[in-house]
Length: 258
View 1 (cartoon, rainbow, N blue to C red):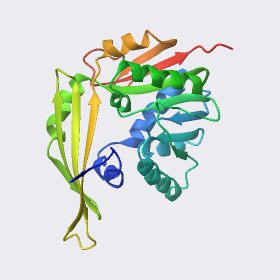
View 2 (cartoon, helix red, strand yellow):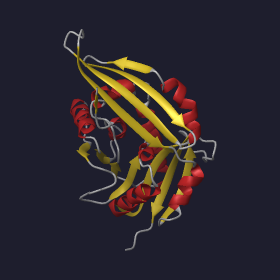
View 3 (cartoon, one colour):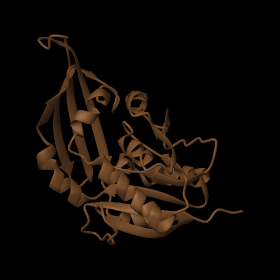
View 4 (tube, rainbow, N blue to C red):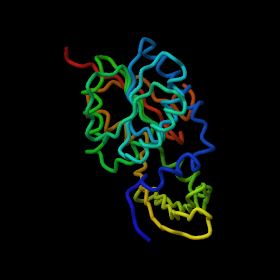
């Protein structure tokens, strides 16, 4: 079995894996936050966009211009194909959100589905926040969510021993959470199938490790930055998050020097 980089061989399986996720509702939620706090926004930058489902749904609203980025070129390749099929205006390109490079400043930068949990240190989170600050317009919004210990404790049982397949691939996932280290690991055994599906022609292992943060831990990191906390929302509404929230969405604004 060959161990590969996260979201390489998983990319063509990803939409199958996430078929129960309501990306349209997630896009509506991001739009609701933007309309609540920065309704004049036009230019959006998505970090860690995966196969682009949220940005593609936001694009259907008709009033945003979106650049969606992801570290994995394989995920971006899938996103570009989806964009062409949907006749979308979203632009996609590979980009590491620890090394943000843009040709313009954006009204809003957003990142969803606990992508920030892939950053395992305070230093890396601060580096990501600094890059976002450079890419944002004055008083632009930064929106990102993160998974908390409660989310991992609730999710680990139904994520463990999950399996699925597409025309070309089959996968089996194991999931475990270490509450002491606060590390959630999802391991994917991915099999590439022959055309007739009778033979396995490739076997790959991807390990995805997330650092799980509490609200207090994330707020302490933010205190080291020039960002102003506009709001902290729990789950998928505009109610204020607390330590019992499973997923927390932060809305930040940074006053840039003019």
